[in-house]
Image (tube, rainbow, N blue to C red):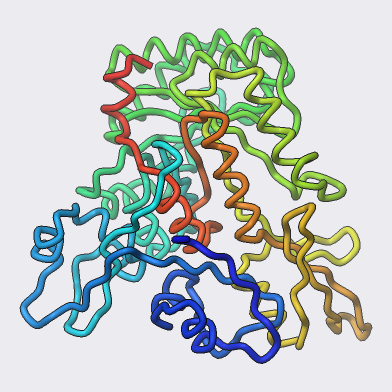
Length: 407
């Protein structure tokens, strides 16, 4: 098998696990973004990726020479080696994963979201895996589009990386006012920003006024098409919208299904949660236009108070507090509890976070249902999940692919 999810046992470290699977320790560290390889926790999940072909860099090698030697594209080397951070700097003695020989689940589009306070390091790491990069922070206030504070920097970092940039426009209310004025403002901003298309986020309008939403999507799609741009929409998958709102999603070139566990009072089993939501969506939408959201879910909860937490942060908290990480196979999530002193009192906090099994199951479902692809926040996605996408699917081209397909 090319990928194994290993559960750490008490006393095991990365070196032990590497010997067990015949994989170099550094590869396990890089593929799981382990900041401290000695900081393993009983119950922790580690993804083991076993490449078919590896190569040890020699003096005088460049990434281009290595790619030519083995007949693989440079971008494939970036995807197979996340530690390269999308840059071609290699050094003698460095171990490179050349390729993985495993059956793929088909081809998908990969869409990454970037928000205002993004990490350049995380963006650079994610870029080789992306088909689309969606830049958030644009808001329509009823009169004009307010620009994104991070748009310029993101464009600069993504330049020359073969990624299609989309402008995400957020419509906060449940009315749009003058639809023609809205579309003119959005298209004008997208053109001036050099974007390949637009992502429309208008949850409230879709829920409250589905007919207006469908008409808005139709109008905006026409305006964008006349400028050789594409349109993605977003749907709150926690509560599928009405028939007219679904129509709007099907009119667009792609529809991102946003499913958030943090909006739920209790975390359901996988079959009653993610699987149920996406199978229901497959009955409403054109499957070839659906992008499944991969929210790398994590929350630190104390009563009604909740803080977001990444899987890496959760592991560090478990290590500091001497906690074992538990796994719920029905929910497919990891969890543990610990005590924290606050306001002179000890309070119990519970941490729940995404497991590799959860994302593997969602990706398998994406392939089974024939969805267009996946979408995620680059700040929340972990390296193991990026590698999982890379080894389970072939990434399709972006903007030009949609135009050639006439979607």
